[in-house]
Length: 304
Ligand SMILES: [Fe+2]
Image 1 (cartoon, rainbow, N blue to C red):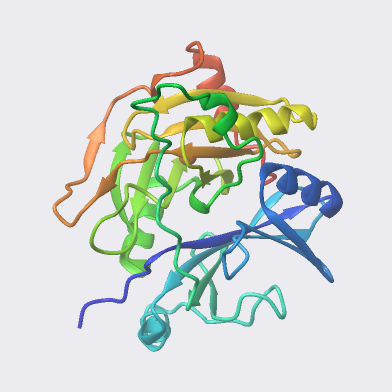
Image 2: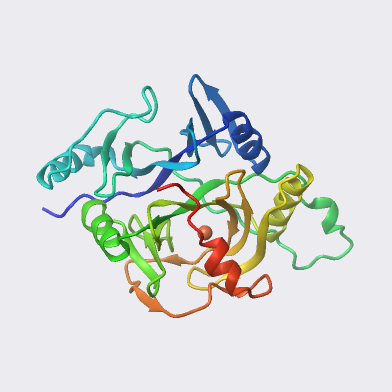
């Protein structure tokens, strides 16, 4: 019998030192936030589950990774984990995120969520052709919100092994790699996003960034404008990535990690073959700064 496979990224968790600041940051970013006892939930409007769960901690730290699975695969996953010697444990966030919890070989909590609400379809970019006798500027959304969590990237000190373990145990597979640096990984079947998850080669485990989908470049830029006005000025963008081709603009969160708005990412099908590339991370964007990309953007600021 083939191994069960996750169908996508459902969410993630972070420990942060200040949940009030987290609510202000992610609220301004465009997510609906809700404080429930010791946790803060954050999600795109209309989603049926929290895409981010924040818990109080001494320092910012990756808390968990949550993948969606088909309800009928729950038993197969439990058996697969058990056969591999992985112990299924009680939820470390009691009352939140029902499903299967376990720790990967690097001691990171992983959650498998059956019945995760399906992601909405990608929004259609604004039609700007045939614009005669119109004011486009008056039609723009001045307060755009993300539509879904698209992907997250995690630092690992065990680059090749981490990719192999997640492929084997969870069925997320590399769609493209930046050789020795990044493994972009996709999940699901049929026509799917180029990646929903990935690893970045580093000195230790940590959260690098999460990315939320926007309608188009105008919505990305307008949301960045909203963040700037609220005082969140650490940013990197805009640009268009290589490998997944998505438009991007990153913002620094209050604890030094990055969060990204993206739009217009490549889709892949079962015909896709994994590529190994030696490319710069973007085809256009901010002035090239090797110090920034290698030193700051990819600095793992998480405690060991
Ligand atoms: Fe990204």
